[in-house]
Image (tube, rainbow, N blue to C red):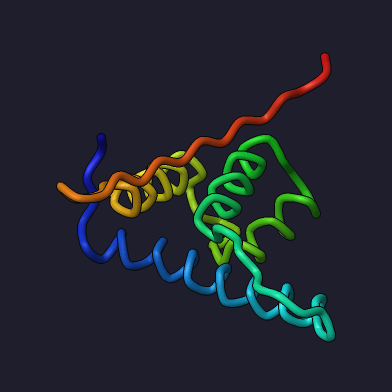
Length: 109
């Protein structure tokens, strides 16, 4: 696992926080008038979109970067390593808990 400085960790974590806030606001807006609770994992959705980002270009790339709150000119390799590091920290768990996350993309050839 690659470790990053607190500044790098904070930079990508801020992106995750911004994404989670936007996603929550959107879900609340879409479900107005519905009764019940909403349960979702912004970290899992964020990591899935970061996987998608690796294979995009042009307008799609810009839209995903905007949604993820990451800079358009950021080095993609460093970005993915930083996001992976953030997710490692989020899923580190403790002696009492274990957090697991899995994401996959299946492509037709």
